[in-house]
Image (tube, rainbow, N blue to C red):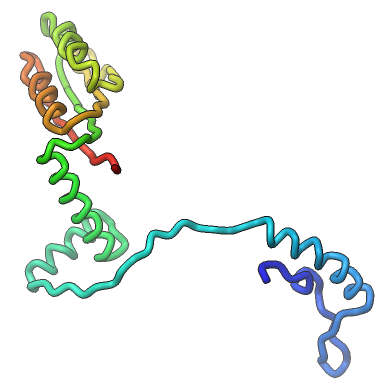
Amino acid sequence: MLFSPFVLLQMTVDAQGRQFFSNKKRAVARFLLPFLQQLQKSVTFQKKVTPMKRFGVSLEDDLLEKLDELVESHKFPNRSQAIRFLVRKHMAEEQWETGQKVSGCLVLVYDHHKSDLQNKLTAIQHDAHHLVLCCQHVHLDHNNCIETITLKGKATELRELADRLIAVKGIIHGELVMSVLKQ
């Protein structure tokens, strides 16, 4: 039983150390019991848990050291979490290579004083409006700006768009980060 009315009531201890409920407490417990049983039926506490499988892994000493370094550098709680990270990363990279649908973020840093740079970037994004979800422009200092462009589409199309934008004269740095979309 999830709820017990007796847990809610303190037990009385007699001189011999025996525990019992007084008549008053027993009456309260009888009164509460139907309510608590109904509450237990109507309230479900379910935590969605993905089933896990255990398996053994054999690694050479140097590879195990690298895994432990990865655990430490990424602050993973354990090796299992690091292995899950690596498998998901590999799956994402495979999706990118096969041209499946992905999401991404392109980061561009540039000097906004460069002639016609912002107009060129905007024109390229408008040509690919079906891939561009949104764009954020932030002034880093008097000269430099950072632009983050959120994208969604086939991995090959996102790479092509990123290459076009990064190639614009005046871009100081550009990088595309992609992530998989669950099917």
